[in-house]
Length: 256
Image 1 (tube, rainbow, N blue to C red):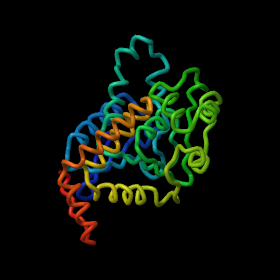
Image 2 (image 1 turned 90 degrees about the horizontal axis):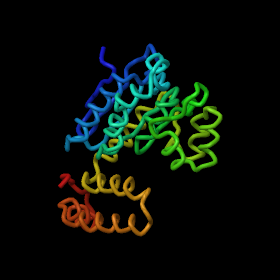
Image 3 (image 1 turned 180 degrees about the horizontal axis):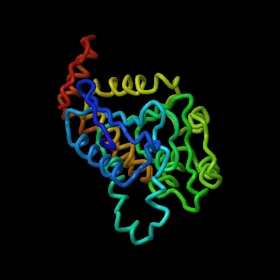
């Protein structure tokens, strides 16, 4: 069985589903390669307006596959080039919504943080427990987590390895919404559906500017925003959206 499934439930939407249930979706090198391939393909497909990433109803991803790492050497890790596999997710131009049930620990938490929104079930658990096995996060956990929740909350998770509940994650800004466990995928798809119905050029520009601007000086980030704002006035969807608003009718967006 493949480690990753891609489904197209309806026009404009894609669901990427991790499938290693016997090991709680542990992120093996094979799974990460498959995941990178899926996101490269979906990101290049203009028909895909929004992507939902899930691990299933029981577990999102419980972390790295330690069996493959316990005897690994620094050179082996360097040659595996895993950072390029994560880049396919980070660079995906389409919005990504993580639908998280159960454990999102270690690499699983880092994977969720690559998304643009996170919908979590009430029973979900988030954490970076790498310190407990003598290492540290290696796929953005020290950086994305700190940017999401601030230094002091991030340090607690990183230095103790203690997990937090979905409600705690929501309170610290790590999670977009918390819903009952049996409604996680349904809610993520509902959000994805809303995004997919909006003008695709504007949606992609918003994501690009937010991500590019968050680490830039404010003046540079505002310049990026201003140029992207101006560029969208060359789109058909801008004309259609504003005319429809003035005509008091529903707009018909083309993604152009």
